[in-house]
Image (cartoon, rainbow, N blue to C red; front, side, top):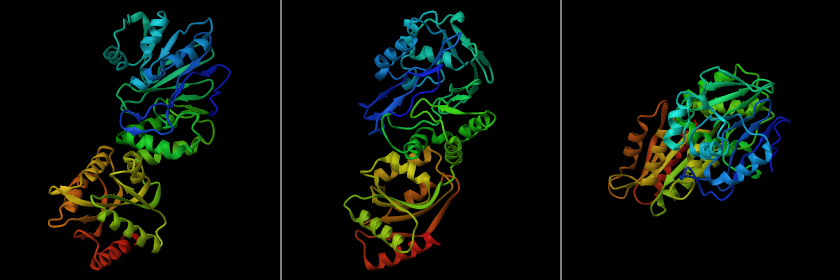
Amino acid sequence: MKDTYISDSIVYVGVDDKTIDLFESQYHVPGGVSYNSYIIFDEKIAVMDTVDPRGTQEWLSNVTHALGTRTPDYLIVQHLEPDHAGSVKTLIDLYPDMKIVGNAKTFPMIHQFFEVSLPEEKTVLVKEGDTLCLGSHTLQFFMAPMVHWPEVMVTYEQSEKILFAADGFGKFGALDTEEEWTDEARRYFINIVGKYGAQVQALLKKAATLDIAMICPLHGPILKEDLGYYIGKYLTWSSYEPEEEGIVIAFASIHGNTARAARLLADMLEKKGAKKVVLFDLARDDMAEAIASAYRYDTLVLAAASYDGGVFPCMEDFLNHLRAKNFQKRRVAYLQNGSWAPSAGKTMKALLSSMKDITEIEPMVTIKSTVKPADLAQMELLADALLA
């Protein structure tokens, strides 16, 4: 178990979910996921967010054990997505005198999800920069709209210099999953928050004005050291700049011939000295990881079979995902396969046309059914252009 100690007055009460197969019903999470929740103990007690209904019973046990005979004065609702707010009504029912802290967009959304009675005296409406004093602890609230829902806010605890970051700085993986932070944090960020780079940049500007000693996200480990590294990654990801020099070859192959061409190109690139070449079979490999890798490296090669006058569907799906996540600032090359009327290249180019700052690398390689010696010559030219 990773360290969940925060301080003598702030307690972790979240839960790990190791039985979930798809996060948000679309992202594979072989290492599970954590739903983080915290309690701040002072003259007044504040619970920071709840958890997904999948973890309600374990979380409630953690909460009641931590509280003992005390009762919470406030529930801070930073984000209404069900993986964090799914147990809000359970806590309201258990502690009816508790006040709910949220912003102007929080409370209408609470009523959309739950049938609860929240008279005005049971709510605390906060806006940008407002504070809530618990005693020796003071919470300050900063709005973070569209990171990645419109009601999101983050909370800075002034005395211990802790940023409760909502979905910011989260990652896939339960807390007892021993793995390096960056890869699963990147896959989480790009696929879930990636569309909202400008909004994340705005939030990071606010965070830059704060003296932060610790970051407590709603997913993944509590970040206590080397915070500059994590913030630096978020600055890069949210600005859509490549992290590294490297070439991702994403291929969509029906009968294996396009896959063979993609692997031959990868071999050529490696022999010519490419620093990093990564292959993804879009029909089989994890789509979210392929998307995250396309953001990680500066160059993308799209290799696809023609299909129904367009492109093989898993490639179209991949490109639609990239477009939805604001893919930009990359070099892109094309390899198409078509037995009688190659159409993949034209279709891929059209799908990329709405994306910003895309530099297309020539030549486009076209193969007819299987790779021939003449195709190898064209692939050599493309490999040289990719490495130029």
